Amino acid sequence: MIGLVYLAWAPLGPEEPRRFLASYREHDAGAEHELVVLLNGVAAASGDPAAARAEVLGALHEVPHRVIEVDPPRIDLAAYGEAARRLEHSHLCFLNSYAEVLVDGWLGHLERALAQPGVAMAGATGSW
Image (tube, rainbow, N blue to C red; front, side, top):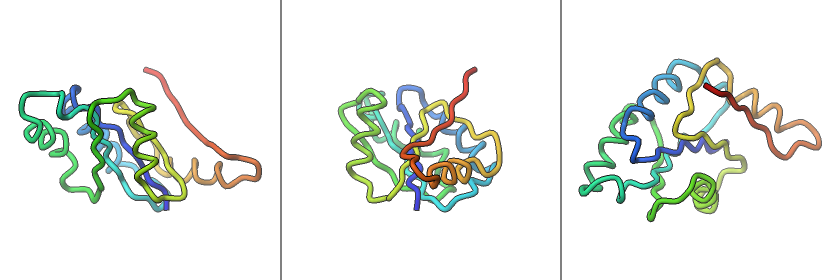
């Protein structure tokens, strides 16, 4: 099973996780996975870490997920590395805070690319 790791950079607030979740729910992933929310910077986001955590995770309450929190805050790659050390999945897919799903089957496309002989990593990117 794929570990789908969504980085929630807490200082951005709840809007980016809400936007991601709306797109995630709208488009079938096309591959079996576990959603893992990687909270980064919650303790530093406000004077009340519990309120900041609830605000960010509030958008995700309807979707099955696991939460990993890193503290102190780290740059994206270091946070992803920390998540990778804590997770047991055979494959991991990392999404940054601004990720938005645009098409059905998106994770299945990555999974099939990764299954090709000689392929060790697959990715997709976009720009606004």
